[in-house]
Length: 140
Image (tube, rainbow, N blue to C red; front, side, top):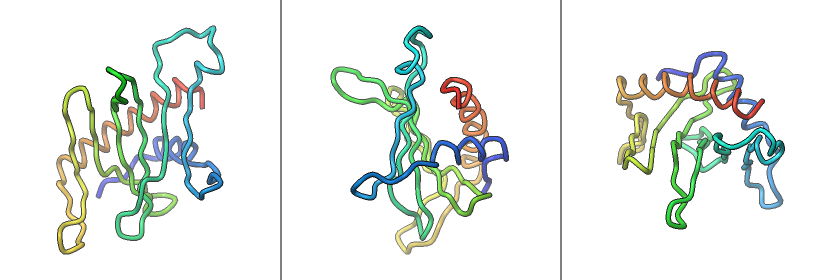
């Protein structure tokens, strides 16, 4: 499994460094333009939340969303497993407006982890750049 590079992992750790809400759920929206409207539009908010586990590892969703005909559309959404503080692994990529959903690491019916190696490398490469963009856009 290919993990995020050090720069992207540090950005990811900042995104998920959030306290749980009253129900114990961890989620947050980062929206720089809501705080600084004079900066104009063009940057979508980033939504981060823990959505479950794969094996014993927490799985986080990171996504940009927009509304289309009243529905929230991911543009894109990625999921990540936090293996340890130094190993954060992309699991999936989706983009609603293009009907793309790709899992590169998943549990099979017997509960074993399976990897589509080339796709997982593609997801990791994309995530490394995307997280740097998020850092710049949201002024983290």
